[in-house]
Image (cartoon, rainbow, N blue to C red):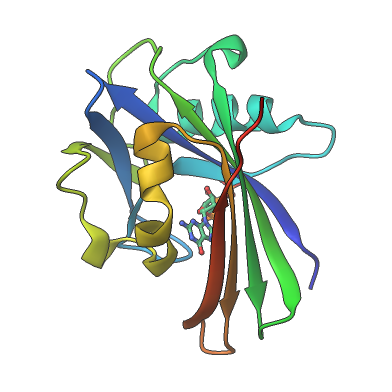
Length: 158
Ligand SMILES: Nc1nc2c([nH]c(=O)n2[C@H]2C[C@H](O)[C@@H](COP(=O)(O)OP(=O)(O)OP(=O)(O)O)O2)c(=O)[nH]1
C-alpha cells in the first residue's frame, strides 16, 4: 500500500470558534474533524485544502489566506508511513457551511471540542490550531489502528 498525502483545514470564526465536520461516509464515519482529503496528482497542498473544503462544505477560501501550520505523519504497524497530512487554518472565507454527502458542519467553541468523537490524536495537537502555532506531529498506531505512541513539537521560526 502506498503512502497517502492529504490536507486538513480548520476554519475559524470570531477568534474562538472552530468549524468541524461530522464524517458521513467512508473511513472513520461518525467522527468530527477538520475538512480535507487526498491530494490529486500535480496539485499543491494549499490548492487541495481549498478544493476539499469547497467540495465538503461549500465554503470558499483563497489560497493566499490559508495559514500553513505544519505536518502530521501517521505510521501504521508502528513503522510504515501511511499518511502525511498538511495542516492549515483560515479565518477568511466566503459562504455558509452546508451539509454535503461527506460532512455535516458545526461550529464549536475551542473550549468545548468533542474529543470523544474525534480522532484520538487530535487531543494532542488541537491547541496548536487554536493558538495558531506551527508544529509537527508524528503518530504511531498498531495493526488495530490504536494509537500507541506519538510526538508533537512546536516549530518556532525567527
Ligand atoms: N486527525 C486525524 N485526521 C486524519 C487521520 N487520518 C486521516 O486521514 N485524517 C484526515 C486527513 C484528511 O483530511 C481526512 C481524510 O479523510 P479520507 O481518507 O476519508 O479522505 P476523503 O475520502 O475525504 O478523500 P477524498 O476521496 O475526498 O480525496 O482525514 C488521523 O489519524 N487523524
